[in-house]
Image 1 (cartoon, rainbow, N blue to C red):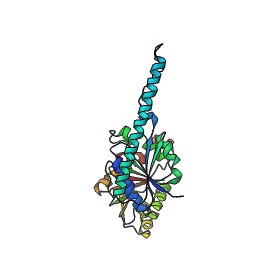
Image 2: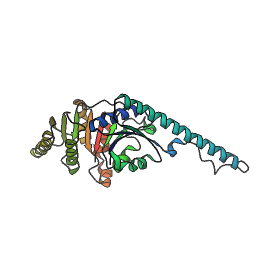
Image 3: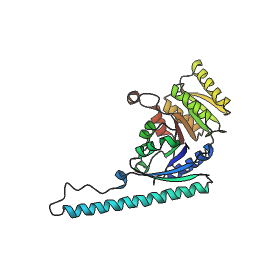
Image 4: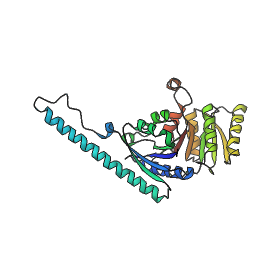
Length: 284
């Protein structure tokens, strides 16, 4: 089965960055690029439900008018979706992507993406979508749910994307972090880029040993690897390091603890995703 890079394109200001991120990934992975636009009727149809408040004698006429208005909303959403996909296709063609396809889906976003999961090599999304574009410093309303539910790597973009020059892997020695390390080492996606392997911890011999062992995995895979231990709250310390070192791609594992424990203690993953100002690659 052919594995695709799926770019989830909507009408938000993130659409061009999503397209550019997917173009970069498709070329690096030598994978076909599929541009996906999802039409969720609940979001695109804004006709109010007045069926319970329509007076006698007017009900049949007004219900017919509401049905016609609903149909117009659906047609407009479909037309806009085709325009969005065509513009993204033209952008990918201009970037010389070898294999490009367009896909229109109807229904809830998460369910639509889960239906494509078996054919997904990488999913590319904007950090926020159309419905939450102005929620600065927060994740889009669907993003955390998608990351928790999808079992595929996800690339999240900011409003602009350019090919990364420096990569940072947030590493804590956990099984989740180790798996992310091995995935990064085996993938051609970041091949040739310097990788900063960073641990948020109290400096100790054990921490240094863990970092050295992890760095050897990347070095053997041909990566120019640098290590660092930063102190403080993980999300704050890692974010500061990313800013100081001008890291433009942050790589991390997704949600290493149970949902209940995250509710009590908070989640470093969610905090990092919310605060980061660069593209983020979330591995599962």
